[in-house]
Amino acid sequence: MQKSPVQKILDANERTADLAHRNDVLRGQRDFARRLAGAGWLTALALGTALAFLLSGCAGADEGTVTYDMGGSIGAYSAKYHDWEQRGIRARIIGVCGSACTLALRNKDMCYAADAEFLFHGVSRRGEYDARASASFRDAMPEGVQRWADSTGAFSSTDIVSISGRDLAAFDGRAC
Image 1 (cartoon, rainbow, N blue to C red):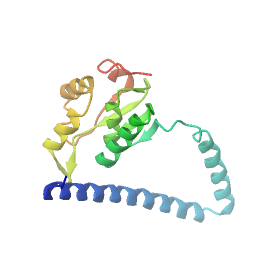
Image 2 (cartoon, rainbow, N blue to C red):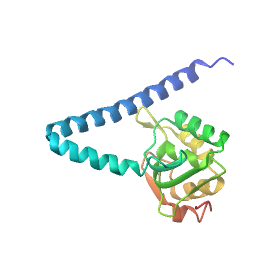
Image 3 (cartoon, rainbow, N blue to C red):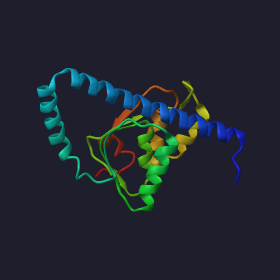
Image 4 (cartoon, rainbow, N blue to C red):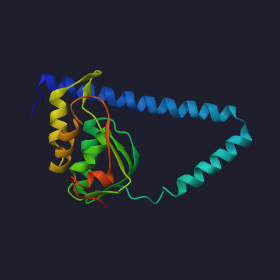
């Protein structure tokens, strides 16, 4: 099926936004490395050892476990979570899950910790609130999440509205 010109533009915009996000992440990593290099080799060695020690606890984490994810491209997250669901990987949110990350809530076989934190907001395109895309994003959520979102206006602007896993469980009921 051939995509319409409008869909091609939307896809290109989404890819551009995803690349901009990745560029920001890489820029932050580069700046951190520069600061680390300027701190001296002994400090760098100590920090590197500490970082390796901390990350060693994360190495065994399940592929489907989300500990800190502030979101990104809706298309990329939708594809990732669809892949997880197809492969039987259970999404488990145990930390902060913001923006497009919240699409994990679509997966039927997922759960979240009581102290997980979800950050919702309406969709923006080129910095402007997009009511139609926000409604589609809301509609992709399970019924309980939709009820909560409607009661708080979580998708009615680009302002961030948060809810804990404990509170979301009252609407959605999928706490781990």
